[in-house]
Length: 212
Image (cartoon, rainbow, N blue to C red; front, side, top):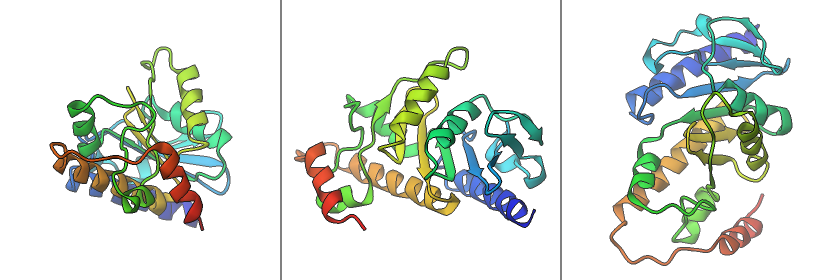
């Protein structure tokens, strides 16, 4: 229970941080954590600032609500990722402020929405693919596709769920969100500049050389 109590408070704190910093444009994104007993804590259907620790949704990996408020419809996207990607223990899904603006301003390359224009940028953020996810009436196969994409990428942009970011723990997932948003903000500032972007192959080579 100590683990669960701590995580409940951390999740709510991070939700309020997203709200305060206006990171989530729709104020209704979701945060989940896979706990050591293989149950999942997830934010319920409410805005970030109104979420309370005791009302978070406690779910089984099979999707059964064990306690708390009803989760949002995209709970299945989180559960699908956890089921086939045990390296991830936390997920953040949101309509991110800068990446959403970037998506509106450019013709997206679905293989990499956020191409790097310098090695230091590619070291901060990996390739960000974009996939299509249907509405909540028919999304099971698309959620499986999202989970499969998560095998190679710690973040995926989807057409309906928004930005989905994974991490080895909650702090790591939120750190990944910050890195992606800061990189997107930098990219927005340079939209009118004639930049030469790195290819996916060059980015992969950089990550291979500097892998820990």
